[in-house]
Amino acid sequence: MGRTHALSGAVLWLAAAPLLAREQWWGSHALSLSTGQVIAGAVVAAGAGLLPDMDHPSGRIAGTLGPISRQFCRWVSRLSGGHRHATHSLLFAFAMGYAMSMLAIHFRYGWWAALFILVGFGLRGLGLDFEGHEFWSGLKDCVTAAGAVWAMHDLDMGFAGYPVAIGCLAHLLGDCLTPRGCLLLWPVPWRMETVLVPRTDGRVERLVVVPLLACAGVVLTVQVLSGGALYHWVR
Image (cartoon, rainbow, N blue to C red; front, side, top):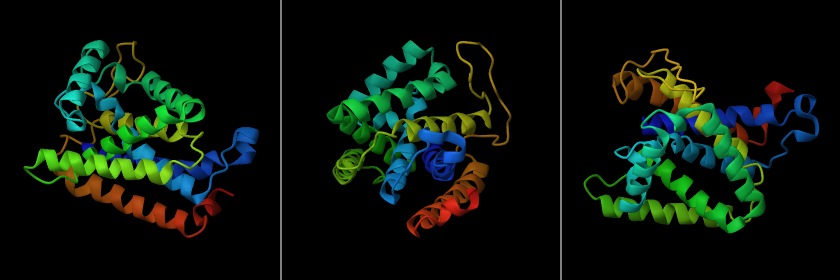
């Protein structure tokens, strides 16, 4: 579900951004973001859409940094109780959002490192690889991620916790629509499951879900780039 998770993270952020900017609802806590910040948030949310799968040693993102990321995912899997346990919970989503926010605000170099990994996760999720050439695919992802960090290094990303949490929540929502669902209220052993997508990476996901998310992402991105028309419908 890599493409679904990355696309849904970006789409949910782009849809939520104007709502988070409403001063009538949030007062002084409302976000005031430039077009560049909204787009940067979409990049972050796309990567964060893969974060819960850090508990999956054989998943797509496990290969992001080769053996280093694979071993890291094995450790996370053991500590979290296995795939779709602790990292697939509301607690994890909000904890990741808070942690990334603290990095972005107080530890710039730590945030750049986290951003590099998030972009790498997003690229792996989208599956823009050179088939059969893992080394060159990894190198391409690293170069692209480094370029994204450079392009965003001057942006104020103090709001980063929002797209990170939203990306994680998009992942949880997607997994809840598949068999096995998620332990949203972990450590409470109650699994939320409403099966609308009968098989991950199956025909429904590939032929319906991914194209719809891609179209929604294009429409929302065009709205943002057109000068804020996205915000009119919530005013």
